[in-house]
Image (cartoon, rainbow, N blue to C red; front, side, top):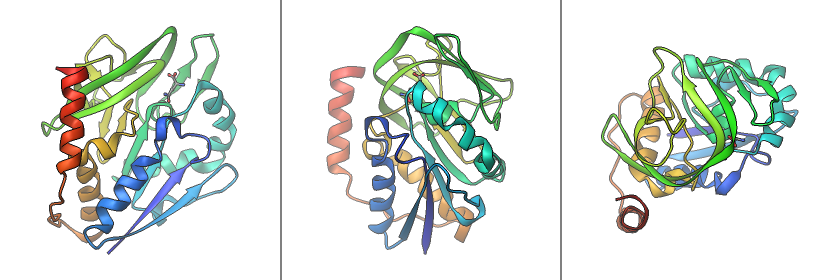
Length: 240
Ligand code: GLN
């Protein structure tokens, strides 16, 4: 088996080691005998989402999100939207998450029109939402992460959040929602990077990608002793 990952803007959107998500996916697949190929889809490079099984986009500052906008609109937006609605696996973090929505109005009043692949929008405020936080997905997975964003994200009707906030701010600090779950798209404010600290979440993405390509397959279990220890420590120190 081989899983192909498109890493969008790896050189521009890589806050708090978001690239670690690719490493975690790769390690967890390699450990199960699944080959992984990752292509860097940088500015100026076009891509066809049909060639990939997983799309990944990390977080960035308002500045990078602005700089990327023209490039995004030269075709990457349609490919990403096609993948999302076609049920492809996608993980989008923070700034990358915001770019899937309709627009992002920065705290200093600049409006960035985004791809509108999903019905939501983001508005920034000067006061940032920063800290270790946690949320729970509908499967009951407790995801621990770190958030740092000025943007408050508001979901349109019928858009399901990825989880409910256990502690922290999440989408907007008001309604306890965190991220978005749409078909096999997972969007979250969680940096950290999120997947190494949350192996169950990583495996959820892997199993969906494999199911899409090869049919439902039971994933062999891995030794997650260290990950469990790290999670326990984070929970104890910052969350519960
Ligand atoms: N620029 C966005 C914000 O501050 C995203 C930041 C991030 O990716 N951490 O809301």
